Length: 94
Image (tube, rainbow, N blue to C red; front, side):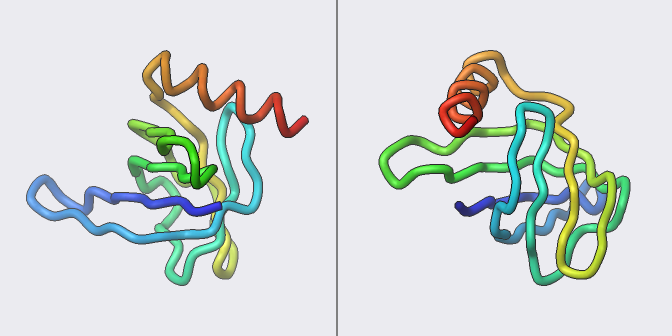
């Protein structure tokens, strides 16, 4: 599963990247990426969980830990329809 993310570095600059999703819950995720964002970085995510479904959008997530190429994110803001889709996906995998 792929994760596309966008990081706001300053009010006028952003960076984006792609990562591989390793673990997913309703509250956050663990991902593997070549250059993980630093701890306490805030990002928006587009979770591509299926080739047949639209991506799930996470409006705001915070990097809580990083080690090597992996990092852990806590989801801070997800619109209700997106959260419902995320919960349905996680529950199907449980």
